[in-house]
Image (tube, rainbow, N blue to C red; front, side, top):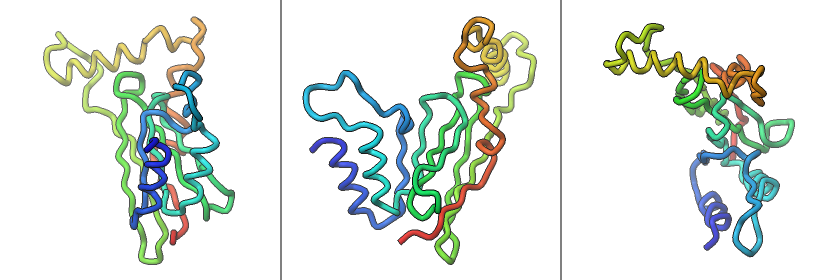
Length: 176
């Protein structure tokens, strides 16, 4: 069974809310070099997911940035949140906790909290885990590939996302 059919079957037969996770976000779901046969790309995946109100979120990381986007109708009754998270290897070297809560009236809340590691700003001899983390942070903040003066597509701060994409609570209406 092709992956697309398998995924739809899993969603259709689930009796719970559905959260998807993948390396690539929807905007990067394309494949110009797939084997022969029909390719399934962004539009088809999106339309299939929007048929199922139980799909509430898609987590991804490919872009190495904090980003949140609503996928669906403007009235928030049909759709889901796409949540992208920064990388541990690149600036700003942050993790993210994700908590999903459903209220008594069925509303769904997704709480996103960005977490910095505990390393300081000095790395000594880079022999302990915290010293190595401090050195890693210094390197990530100064990586030449993120310098706009050298032609970087995005500045290093781009990965931090906008304030509303870091520590926030996302809401979804009750789902049937």
